[in-house]
Length: 452
Image (cartoon, rainbow, N blue to C red; front, side, top):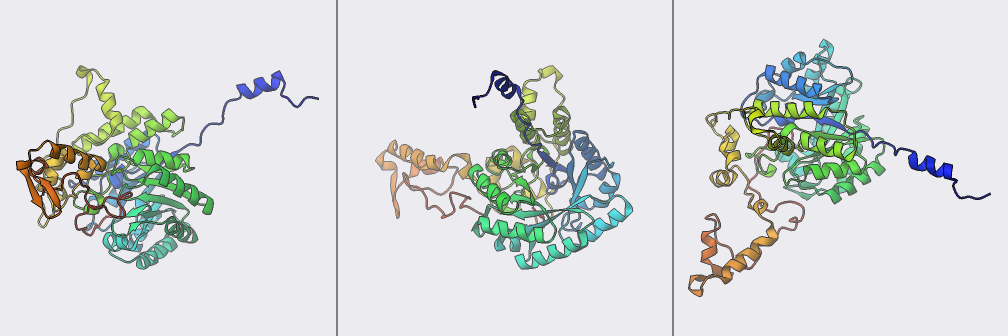
């Protein structure tokens, strides 16, 4: 009897449909992470209406508020009002961020009243430097906090642990995979098995993401890992897709790419944003991954978010849809919000929500260097700057060259480099040992009352 498949066997194998890819669960974070650093306080009624739109699009996990102290994060002084106002839906989990045990107690009060969140998130930093500056306490002290919060929340909530600076820390350098695994195991020992891997400064790359996620899955198979990547260098979607291809089935995103660190927090690189929901979901659907989301309702929610904040957001999908829409049938653009006066003691205009920072990033960076990190290394690739300067120097007559302590300097190039100090033509500036992973240029960091 032959071992070769028969014609009937071949037909059965070729006609059989491939198994569908695993469904990806997207947690929409616009109402919390997206709004946390907005200078204008969004009314609770508007937040509730936005959350309803988000839930209508099919999201099963929605981050809707934070139990941060109102003096530290005034945007969420209405946390209880929002939680009471949203309509509960079967299979939909609402998440609230809890920075300390008192926040968990507030969540428990809501749970006893029938309007509390189903999920709470707890945060640690994978580096000592980031913990001291962002949370204002040591890693050991924060883990004591997390242990107390986990004890209060156990058996009451689905708990999500977030590991910040899981790839690179702007103060301590690259984070080792061993440190990330150590943090994940500590969460698991406390009963926290949903663990978000945070790329806080957006310095990760797809190969690093695949390596880390694959390693974590093998070392801690009982945990559910979540991709939480900032889009500082435009790699948020690429990194999230790499994590999904490595086995993740959960990801955090925000409509229009809102959120992230504001410009007045130097190490966040300013208005970087989270991975954009509309763009990621569009890519996943095109790749055949089911998300359970209605794309038309999702894009409508993205437009509503733009109208709420009074400015265009970072969704390329929405811009492409606008370009394909006849001019006469396009909705009127949302009016730009007036810039409020800077609060007393503000470090930079960005802290007051100055729209000029987004409208004219080059000029705004020059005016707000004290608050916004210099990002000229993102304007053009590093490897081309020295070459362009060298070519420009060759075209300048000798009489325009001046001698400098470190070599010949081109005065002509100096005048065209945004009025910044001149640089040596044809030479590259000293590079940080971490320059392959994170930017070597930082402004003096400031403490951040926020969690992420």
